[in-house]
Image 1: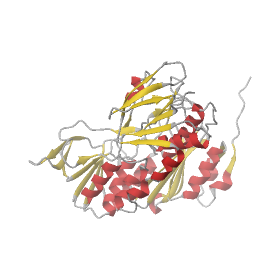
Image 2: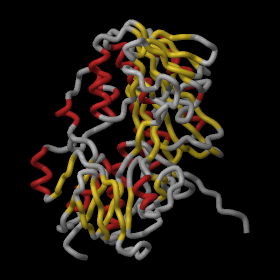
Image 3: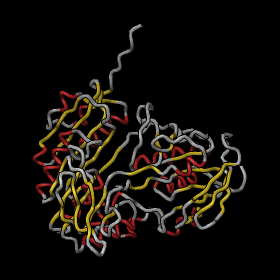
Image 4: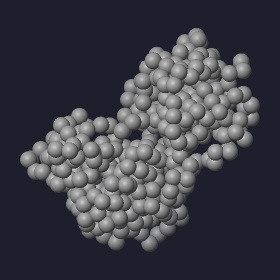
Length: 426
């Protein structure tokens, strides 16, 4: 390899982890980490939780101290987006090339990693550009939303997913008199949890003073003569008063650079279990990727989580150094909505049955998901022991008998057993 080393595009959690992993694996070649935001790599999950409520400040979000990068020999470039990239020999698997940033900086590289993340999905509706209508993805977004929460009287959150519900919980915790969540689907967090969990969260948020509207389509944002938002118009003609609107309609993977490089992108940058893109000389990790299921190795999934970003980045670093790594991992996530702590392990997509443990009305329960009697995942609300037991079982390729799991008085950890696999008939 030449002397240009590795270029990591995207100073995200995945980007930093990839750089750190290269050093931990003994790589001594130059590493350049480029990020579009002016801040060094920081944690995103607290932005919609602890940062909004004031229990964590900007410094607490930083993943590493400023001195770390110099000490580790990592060149960190902040506030510049890589706008162009080209490989010297596309498809060769070698990975050498050059890139150009928005500031005109030219960067030569011997290896390339894309950890470019995702952008918030914007609603193309009348009034979407009004002052007071925003998203929550970056530190700057969160700073602005937090500042406006101090005087807002009518907050409307468009989207009943994790980010939207976390922000709604924060607004209520800060004393905002009116908070409304508007969700187009017929239940909250519909893509992520079972109906019983959706029903629980709707009731729990309403008990805490948040109004939840389901099956409600937003058609426009209305404002005053000064260009400030004053209301949210729904499909049935209802006008919700609003002086602050948060749009939490999901994210879109950043694939522009990958497409420029001719890499396969289908709902994200397509990578294999070793984090290799369609050009084996380029790796990618984090929210921007579509990858095989990390437990089964089959299909394609896109995972938005710290755990996936870190694990996939470690795999990508090993791949760049020619050391293919073991990639079977248990996906896990969390969403803290005020005092409601949801912890998820595994992937519940495709489940054909579930077991409810505990009483949702007591705000402490778990839901175990199964397919064909095989344990797939758990959603645990204020039930960390159940979460840890299922995460352990999945990590060991084990299962938990669904009939025995129904008894909330029985420890799930005591029910973990090796999964019995029946050999096909011959």
